Amino acid sequence: MSFQNLNIQHQKGICHITINRESKLNALNQLTLTEIGTAVKAALANSEVSGIIITGAGAKAFAAGADIAEFAQLDAEGGRLMAQNAQHNVFNAIEQANKPIIAAINGFALGGGLELALACHIRIASANARLGLPEVTLGLIPGYGGTQRLTRLIGRGRALEMILTADMITAAQALELGLVNHVTAPDVLLTKAEEILEKIMSRAPLAVAAAIRAVNAAGTGNGFDTEISEFAACFNTADTREGISAFIDKRNPDFKGE
Image (cartoon, rainbow, N blue to C red; front, side):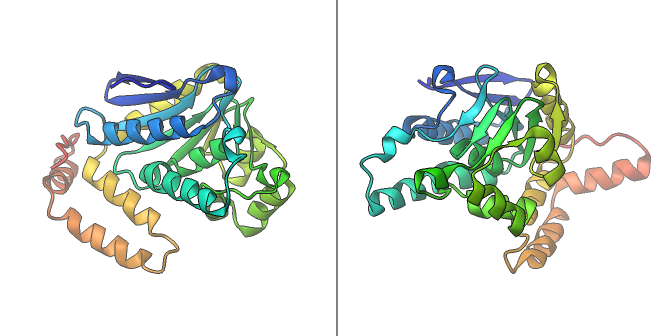
């Protein structure tokens, strides 16, 4: 499968998806968003892939927002369709993925670029990263889930301040707010992402997928019921029996994803 705006590499069970529009600061035009959705779905369907890392080409940007030129001719219905399609095919697909997806933020993550990172399960930022949602400076608001996912991560007041001021924050500030999980030196960003992903990949894959679904249900009104259902379903898997047996036998488990 070939892509115009992405580089895809597979290594040790990890699918690396790199947004490859460095001259445009990896801005997310509609083609790029479509390709990200396609690449993510292909990786999730690939039995040889256990996790995904999304990053941007070069050192300057993870993804510096949407391609604003594409907004110029939109009316309300066009804006609605753009947001709906992106949410369903890209951002929700990432958030609801049954395999762990890490955003390795290597520079500017602005607007849709930050929203892409927010949809990922874990975020790691280079120390030189800058993050923000500048949409109100264009007379817009975040339309790819930013108002919802940022609020869940850092709380209503802090989310409103970021969105309403349109200010960028540093990687260190993002770490303090809980927006990112780790901050690293630029040259070890991908190494740190791989390290975390490899640790997750050593765990029971069906349990990892169940945990993602349960965490995603937090705050929806049926989070506890989802957790109970997912917990119960684990007992029908061979991996749970293997994990319990390995613990009792004091050995490392051999999970098969069954």
